[in-house]
Image 1 (cartoon, one colour):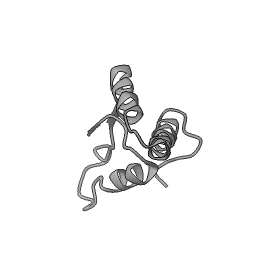
Image 2 (image 1 turned 60 degrees about the vertical axis):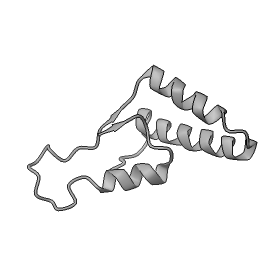
Image 3 (image 1 turned 180 degrees about the vertical axis):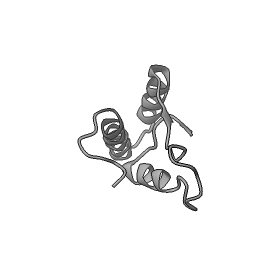
Length: 80
């Protein structure tokens, strides 16, 4: 499992695709878990805001919010 969200949608899709690659797990065992908490989100935000380059900081903020939105407020199935 991952502690905290992946930094981008690309990483999220890559990590979800690694679950049970071989296909030998029993039904229900093929899961991708992300553990979120407010302190974790705050530490991620502080880390991103410490980036001195404004363009890079904005890129990381947008990527993090895209991932969090996809996880917390999904509009489509992420497994297809």
